Structures are given as structure tokens and as C-alpha cells.
Length: 426
Image 1 (cartoon, helix red, strand yellow):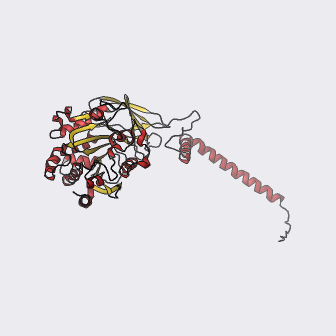
Image 2 (cartoon, rainbow, N blue to C red; image 1 turned 135 degrees about the vertical axis):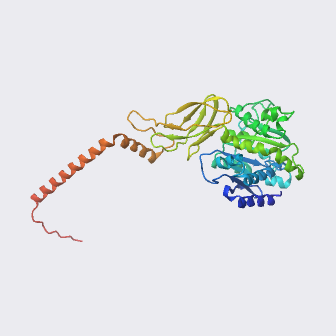
Image 3 (cartoon, rainbow, N blue to C red; image 1 turned 180 degrees about the vertical axis):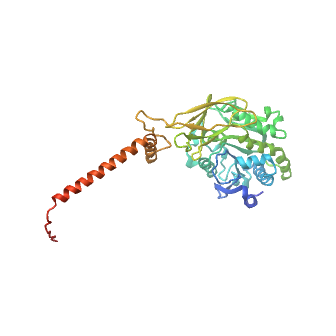
């Protein structure tokens, strides 16, 4: 499809499947082409305590297979909703966002970079080398992705590429720039996610070049300024880089076969967000309201943030193991619990945290309760714990005020003399 045909296909999908989707744009390319996104959910556009997944295609302009497969995926989900249990699970329990083309200008030029000849997968902030940490100097497509992740919380993600057949996971590079395996804190979880894609694929797991059809990015070849590592570090999002076709620009007649090879991989990867991992919400014990906070796993140096409004979290982990999960919110007592994560079943853990109270009975100030809201919370605490005492005092004081007022009025009447006329001179 040309860019114009892609745009028409996205909008047509939005009309045909409006009951489970919405269409929106996250920005524009250098040449002004909208970066269209399809959201698929039973409640599109609404905030729910559910994980979100995003697919991004056509990061490199000369790798167009991803954009074609993502439109096929969207339409297949639309056609099979209420017919296929796996599709139902995805639509009802996940918010799936699909960006078919991140680099429409590069596609139109049939080259790797964008209209400014910049490789977008080298344009993100890098954890090792800060040469591109000036956000204003980045490409509009890169800035659109970064803004997207600030506005929306994604649990996991995958970008679709061409030129090989392998599922790539972090880290994508190392400080010494050598071609060696460099593991991130969630190395086990990433290997598990990459294996889901590879083993569900027609022949990716049979690769002779990559064991099991997966690879650590730094062990393959170092990439600096890549989108994958940036998602994990700055976006709290577990992203894979999926190489889905040995041929970067295959003949269009090959697309149905490539789609069939990748279909179950794509579906199973998205479904893994609700089939595995630990999920839940964080609440306050005194008010019952959601508490935005942090979720940590003992032994893994990585923190997952809850959502700001609903305080839900979705922590991906390797199944079949035991974990200690902890919830932390400033101004509240942290809590931890041990779980055994089943191999084919997610675990739900809600945390109810008690507020920390100072020696004089006031609630400690929390990052979640600032200014007037915090003061009202402290007042509420006093009223809740000493209500009966305050009620008696108020009744007694009101009665005393009534008696005093009557006594004053009586004395004034006794002392009153005939009034003198006063003249006001202006």
C-alpha cells in the first residue's frame, strides 16, 4: 500500500470496526503525514485497570512488511471477535494500539531513514552515550513516540522490522561497545516473551543462526539510541524488536504467507499480558481510594509504576517461579507478599496500604496528597477518630454561648437611658 492507501485502510477499519476501535494520530512525519494509530478494545479510549500493548511497524522506511501485517492483524481481530476465544481475551482484557507506520516518509523514498535521512532507531536517548539527549534536536517521529509514552502507559510493546528472522530483546548495546551478551534486569522475562513469539512462529525457533530464534541485542550487534532500550528504561514498557522477514521488501504476493507465519506469534504475544505476570491495584486503607505508587520485585532491580488514576499495575515475570512483590507509596506503609506464579495463569494481588501517622496523630504528607487535599485528609482523620468527643464539646460550647448572650442583653436593658439626638454634619 502507498501512504495514501494505508491512510484510507486505517480510516475504513475505524468505520467498519467502530464498536471495538478508535483511530487517532500521535503526530506527523517530517513531511506532515499523520502517524495514525488504531486502538482495539471493548472500551476504546476509556481508562481501565487493564494492560496496554503497542505494535509499531515501518520504523525503517525500507522495511514495509510490518505495516502490511499490522493492518491484517487489526482486520483479523475485527472479523473474529466473539468467534475466537484468543481474540476475545485480547479485545476484552487488553488495550491494543497499532501504529502501522512510524516512518511514512522513508517508505515513500524507499530508504531506511526518514525525510531528513535520520535512522529513527538511533534517535532515542541512550543510557550509555548522551550525544542525543537534546529532545528538541530529535526527529518529529521520535518526539511523537516519546510524547505518546508520556501520555499513555504501556505494559509491553514490539516493533516490526525486516532483514532477518529473530526476536531481539534488551540490552541492545553495552558501555564498551563490544559484541557481547549484555543482560538487563529483566533478562529472564524478556527471554520468555521473545520465546513466546519465536515458538509460536512457523519456523523462527528453528533458526540455525539464533538459538531458539531469539537473541540479546548486544550479542547480535550493538545499537545505540534505539527505541527498544529507551522503552524499557524511560517508558516502563517491555519492548521487543521483531525481525519478521529475511527479505526487507518482498514481493506483495508473499505477504499472505508471511502473515500466516506470524499471525499466532503476534496474537500470543499480546495475550501473554493477561495470561502471565502479576496484576492488581493499590488502595488506601483509610479512604479506599486508589494510590499511585511503585511495584518492585525482590532481586530484580527494576521498578514498575502504577497508573495515576486507577493505580493499577501489570508486572510481567517468568512463570513457574516464586516472587516477593512489594508496593510502595510515599506517606504510606509499604507492604510485601510472596506469590507463586503459575505457568499458564496470571496472579492478581491488590495492596491496601495504611497511612503513616506521626506521634501527634497527624498523617504524614504524601506525594499523592498535596496542599489543601493533604490538610483535608488530616482533618478527616481527626474527625474519624475523635468524633464523639468533638460533638459533646460543640454542644456544650453552643449552650454556654446562648446563656452568655441572654445575660448581656438583660444587663443592657437595665442600664439603657433615653437616647440623645445626634446630628450628622456633612
